[in-house]
Amino acid sequence: MTGSLSQLLEDSFQIAWEYLERTGELGDGAAASRFLSDVVETMIRRGQRSRLALSNRAISAYQRFRSSGDGGSERVRSSA
Image (cartoon, rainbow, N blue to C red; front, side, top):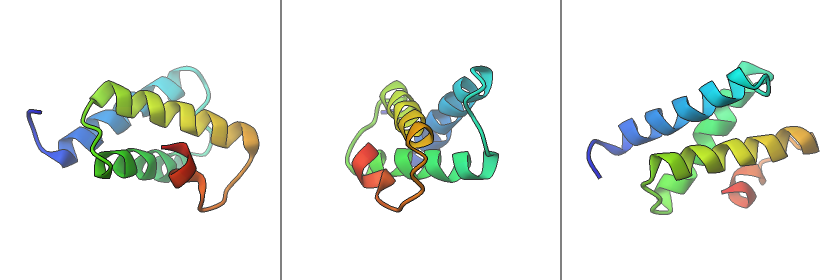
């Protein structure tokens, strides 16, 4: 992997954010920001280093989170 882990997090987050924004699925920006950051960071800590895998999984997790209406703390562990 080239670049730092913080750059990986930032790039993956940005890809997910832009996709959700373009599709109209973003919702509350503050909640989306926290959720996406938490999911991507958790996956990086578990060893994932693919930017696209990180962003795609974060998007899927966020879509499930929004559709379920669940705001609980278990979301990151079960989504990643």
